[in-house]
Image 1 (spheres, rainbow, N blue to C red):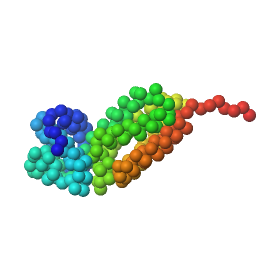
Image 2 (image 1 turned 30 degrees about the vertical axis):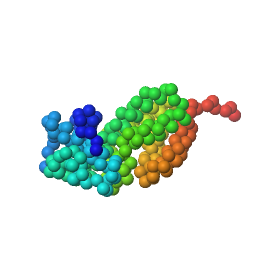
Image 3 (image 1 turned 180 degrees about the vertical axis):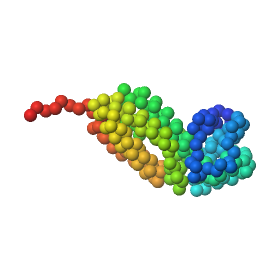
Image 4 (image 1 turned 90 degrees about the vertical axis):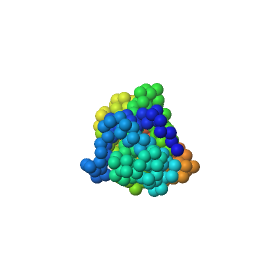
Length: 231
C-alpha cells in the first residue's frame, strides 16, 4: 500500500490547487468542492490511492470501495468528491497531462545540445520514463473511459513542440513547425495506444521501433536546407 504522508501528497496538492478540472459530463453540482486544507489533503489522498490501485490491480478490478479503503476513509467521503470511478480516473489522467507539459519544457531547455536524431530518441525516452514513474498510466490509457485532455494543456504541449522545432530549424516557419509538432504528438499517441495493449516485454520492441521512426522523421524535417543546385 502506498504511503499517505504529507510528502507523497504534495505533488498532487499542487495539481488540486491549480489544475483540478473534471469534465461536466462526469461531475455533479451537488458534489462538495474542497476549499480547506484538510479537504484538499483528503482529495489528494484519494487521487494517490486511486492511482496506486489501478497500477496494482488494473482499472477493471479497481473499485470505489478499494480506493476508500486504501485511503483509510469511508466510501461516503469518497463519493463526496467523486461520483464514480470514471471521474477519479479522469482526474488522475489530467494530472498526468499537466506533469507532461512540465517535462517537455525541461526537454526543450536541453534541445540546443541535441541533433534531430537524438531529439527524436529523447522525446520517446522521456515519455517512457514518465510512464515508468507512473505505472497506472498504461492501464488508464486502456480503460473504457473518456480521457479527453484538457484543451489548455493539449494546446501548451503542441505549442511547446512547435517552438522547439522552429528553434532547431528557423527555416521551417511557424506553420510548418506546427505541422511537425502535430505529427510528433500523433506519433507519441500511437506509441501510447500500442503500449497500452501490449505486454511489458512487447513494449520494448514497440518503443525501439517508434524511436527509430521519430528520429528518422525529425532528422529529415529539422535538417537545415542545403544549397540549391544550380541549373
